[in-house]
Amino acid sequence: MRRDVIETIQGVEIFPLISLVIFVVFFIGLMYYVIKMKRSEVEEYSNMPLEEDEPHNQLFNNDSKPKGD
Image 1 (cartoon, one colour):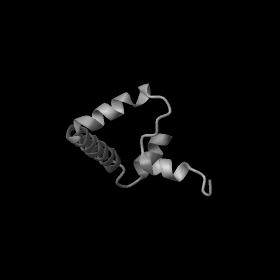
Image 2 (spheres, helix red, strand yellow):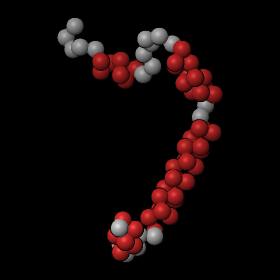
Image 3 (spheres, one colour):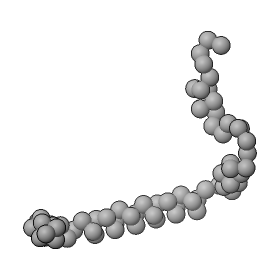
Image 4 (cartoon, one colour):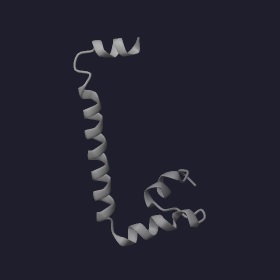
């Protein structure tokens, strides 16, 4: 029954192709980003799980403090 419903939709055969294209573009973009990363960024990210309670982003440090203290 599901197959009959899906087959009645016009242009349904294009959806798997669109999904594949989106996945490939995302994957290639992510690989490009990783390849172009600086060595210092890679080292910082790789050490993050080993560090304890050290803030990594100054933006979040300023916003997380209560105002007026």
